[in-house]
Image (cartoon, rainbow, N blue to C red):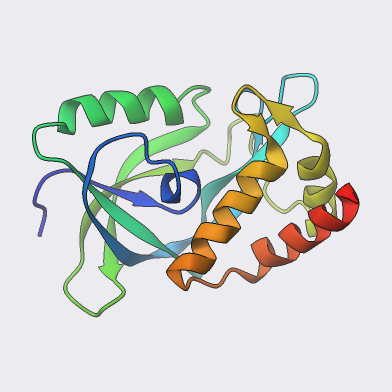
Length: 179
């Protein structure tokens, strides 16, 4: 099933899609996990003091719970142009098509997704959570403080009923570091 343009959201697309959304559904993407594995040199950090942003990182047996967003009919071309400008700013992500499964058990669909290039210089998979917390607590970039990105993502995951133990731990730790 593919009716229009569907985009898988797992981080900032949850709370700031930036395009007109006609439909939003809880979904799961198998074989990938949500991870602070990309150094941010534009949006949430700088080249001299990089922050961290989430990416879909391939991992056998992993699953990432998020949402699929269907672009308002007639806006597909503009939506893809917007997403490419936003997500492909430093070429650390690949735009790809991946199969998602709906949370309610209905048949899934193929969705556009932005996944990390593990060979890119900004890739930093495997950083210990404490190191991630230290970076997120201090970094800021063109879109604002790195901790704001973390807190917004955790808040929206919670609203959706999606548990992410690592992000919850990071939010608590970063708040503690900021006090």
